[in-house]
Length: 109
Image 1: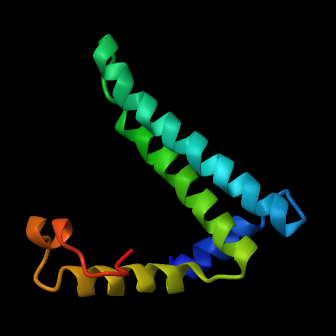
Image 2 (image 1 turned 90 degrees about the vertical axis):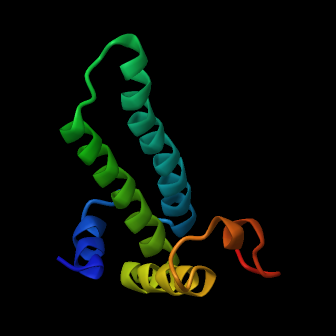
């Protein structure tokens, strides 16, 4: 499945109609779902075994919220994926480097 196919299928389940509601819902949802994923790791300190399948589902929920945010803004998920990889290639042409991470070029966000 491609990123855009995923985005189109995920869009079938977006309940909000207005753009600003979709954006707000996606942002709140991303934060909440990251919190749920983080909670799985926090539970390890209470003696719980890490549940990898549960973690995968939470990552899927985060992806759904990212897709919703992209859809609300009229962006294709694959374009965002490509933009991110191009940014990382420019920042780390030979792979990750702590030196390059610490000393980024001006405007490198």
